[in-house]
Length: 346
Image (cartoon, rainbow, N blue to C red; front, side, top):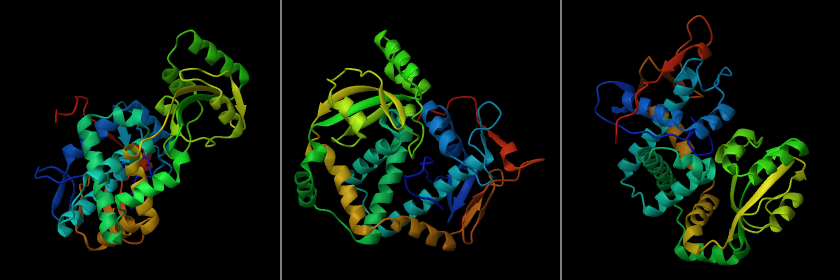
């Protein structure tokens, strides 16, 4: 079972007392309504759906979106529920150990979400759903700290910040649109000069759609704030020549032709950089995978039941939720319809 935030399927989980269930984990209920509301939150976030479609692949090559309106494939729903079960096991262990989830854990979780999916994508989720995600990932950080016995002091964070000043001074915050030809890049530059929205063009036209977070296209071309010499030389030289707000002429690199905009140059203060520094130092001290190993071990002893509508839970060497078989074909032909009405207000 995959647990951590590297995959696009980062989701929330919880327990409740409602009668209909999606899964039961050691007697705690993951409600069917909870699963449906999460699917709705995902479906309403167009940029996130784009990331999922480009990165998700089911066990038999299935995509995420079904053929019908407002549907997901059963393979995607099973993967989502599998992730919820993982988070439920983590939450139960945090309670059992009486682990305190700190504000620093929540700040790190927020930074991790923004780094993984892009701040524009995260901002497009309902606030109540984002809060759930932050709590889930904060519990992961807290449990990892407890499992490994690692902790990073404020003084260690400060020393790292001061010893690596170049990483945090004069960072360039930028965005770009990547296309395959000079003609396409020149046409895009002309559209921007004529007043069209840079982010909207990036979402529609940019070919930067790969990578773990789905590339920058889904984020309106946003590349975040980066220290110097982060990019390939041709891109970096063009970026260095810009003033805030200025848009470059087409720039060719080995990836294609870029239209680049410098948003701002700024120093990142210690208080802003601290959550990411702390998380990095903790991971370096502990090594990766402590929570993933815990979940894989916990599954063996856990009592897990999945509503047959969503499949079944199998243990063994590769534990997880298996989608129900498709009718007259592979699982990609079977779909779970979503309610068309909006989810209830939190």
